[in-house]
Image 1 (tube, rainbow, N blue to C red):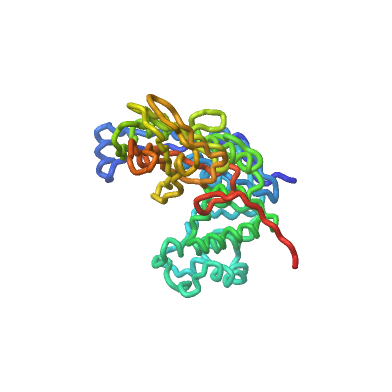
Image 2: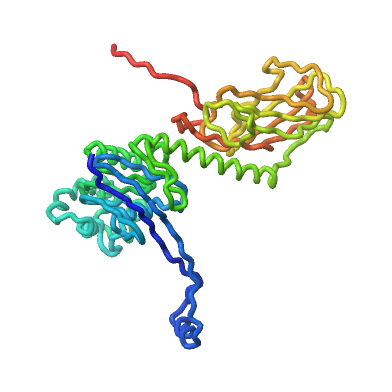
Length: 408
């Protein structure tokens, strides 16, 4: 396939100015007194970027905020020029970047369709032919003859999106299009982008929604601090990115745990829980896990004297307080004859069924009747779950299952 988008050794530099004078008189004052000095900072949004996009391919750009994704799209669209290197894009380019950027607030929606369409390169004849489709897609029939200054931000962006996708581009650049409108309109936007993809249009797709990138994009580029961290098949690049995010979350949670450990607990103190550590299959301590992988919670305790038939229990809560489960050793049929001094007990989950989110962990030691608390630490510990290989994203838990179909 022929290459239609190419970034060759591309770098983009911005100069950030600080402490700007607030009024024109301040400028003259500084000039007259020879004190004109404006503190500034150089920011390299992109450094030495190299990648290509073949005709008919959908490429996803992923990475954290400030990694250079939107800057790369603006370079591809021609809105920005590179400081160094070369950007090449062949064919008509439509950019879903700053939707409605060319709208005039005093003009009606109808008038702005023609104005914005002309800016995007459509002739008046093309706009007349496409006008009804644009308005129908935007769902703004009742408001099309109202000045857009009275539109909500959602209405404004919907009209801008509807115009841009009717340009019939060779290359479509999209930046967080899933932020447009409500859920139903977002779904319609994704369906339309899917149609455009199937028609053979080349797409550069920026989104924090990794599900959308995984399902829509053939390949992906992961940008981190303005540089290419990885590129290749979208599923492989996404897994590498998620692993990096998990590592950073591990560091953040470790600091948070030592600084802000919650102390909501009660009990008589005859036995106390010293700490809880979350371990992976290799025995390494972690606080970020992936759905469907093993997790072991190791509970260290100290008993001041011999305690007969203690019961250890745990509970998992989602961060919003929803109680997910609450097993204990007695209900599980795992009887402990006695404890004294220090020891540890493991709560083992063979395959973590939780979906992506933040979870709180309670742990307790009770007597055999579960009425006398020796130590109960309520939602004191925390771990995160990321999706990993599990593609499900709705609900609380992942249920291993499969589909069967037969024609009757």
